[in-house]
Image 1 (cartoon, protein in one colour):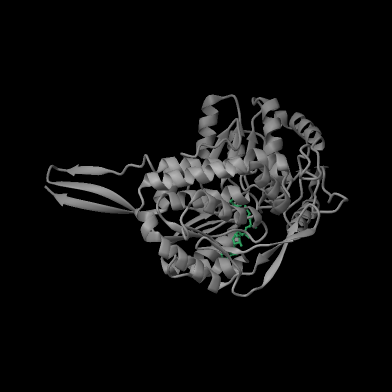
Image 2 (image 1 turned 60 degrees about the horizontal axis):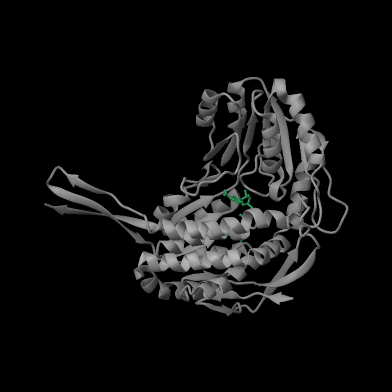
Amino acid sequence: MQRLANFIGGEFVAPHSDAYFDDVNPATEEVIAAIPDSDGHDVDDAVAAARAAFPAWSAAPAETRSRLLLKLADLIEANLEELARTESIDNGKSISLARRLDIPRAVANFRFFATAILHQSSEAHHTDRTALNYTLRHPLGVVGLISPWNLPLYLLSWKIAPAIASGNTCVAKPSELTPLTAYRLGELANEAGIPPGVLNIVHGYGAKAGRALTCHDDVAAISFTGGTVTGSAVAANAAPRFKKLSLELGGKNANVVFADADLDDAIATSIRSSFWNQGEICLCGSRIFVERSAYDTFVERFVAATKKLRIGDPLDDATDIGALNSEAHMRKVLGYIELAKEEGGTIAAGGKRVDRNGFFIEPTIVTGLSCDCRVLQEEIFGPVVTITPFDDEREAIAFANSTRYGLSASLWTRDLSRAHRVAAAIEAGTVWVNCWLLRDLRVPFGGMKESGVGREGGFESLNFFTEAKNVCVKL
Ligand code: TXE
């Protein structure tokens, strides 16, 4: 069984505690690796290595940093199959999804930010012909990057790439539930020639290693992706130390289908937005709202399509639905299915744990619940969606905006004016019209309300990971 190590200063080192805990394959319940139970001492070492590497790395020409990140992207791409398999074994997701989404997006993240830094510009203003004002942007120093288990390498790369591309050095703390591809990234970073200490990876529990990172005085910023409750704890630790903070948190996203929509496209895409990654994507559209005149047809066709999804071994190319990431998470999701019944919902499809080894739940559809039910208010983060009818545009918008979250939404209509009108009215950081998860890395990404603070993505990420300075020169 593989014993992992922390990646500090370009070396793989044991945790100070010399203690480890199990990494479990959620599809087989087998222990597959030993994860370092790191603590503040390990974080201290990682931050020290990052500090030591910062002067040379931040002074390196952007072209040098770009070339090294492009090399890392090429190495990830060259190892795509191995990384997809590793991600599938560690997370429970189907290997076909890891091959199509997770690993290619990690490659794209490194390539995007490796080239974005070559085209950054900053403003200058000729102030009333008496002065010249211009803006310089400097890297922050050592930054802390904390990522969740649902899209492990994808979301880790979403933070590491802009952080080090813009000249910072970093300490990354991946989720303790999915450490394997993060561990492999350290090996690939060495192979790419990224200098020791630029990227450091400390494994372990959030409340211990993660918390130590958010409290460390030499860490200038924290970029966090995870649950809203955890985000609140991260903010409580980082804010008093005046660290720059980016929080990408939970979602409870609306998927609004008007009767004039292309139902074939809406249904096919909604199957993906409901059940991809077992619904463990913060951008999943877990609350489906359908205009009443199309409701019965939509439910009938959506239920039929859901029942065709293949649940099984994540390593089987034919599998659509893999295992949920952990036993605890599976029990949380099963609890919400029971709650849906208690709140008066009807289980139109699925609803049960699959009778096999591993943490599998049938893709589940609940009808008959109103917006104020807990099942439509709280993030479930599993293969469970609700379908609710609405009567008109006003009600559709009110339903969509009826939660504390505001991460993303999809809406389906052929009416161009309505598409723009409703998209503007929905309280979400991203609104997809007649599509889902179609990403352009140049646009700002993040949540409204309790779905997050700040924006990352594109030059927003480069701005987050740098500090602006204004210089005013009298002419
Ligand atoms: O989150 P957790 P999970 C959300 C998704 C869901 C959650 C699932 O909606 O709510 O993430 O991921 C570390 N101090 N998003 O369960 O538990 C922990 O070790 C410092 C939203 O992993 O919050 C892990 O590395 N760190 C997102 C990380 O925080 C702490 C996209 C996340 O853990 C900590 C994907 C602490 N006190 C998932 N406690 C979006 N909005 O884009 C835990 N951690």
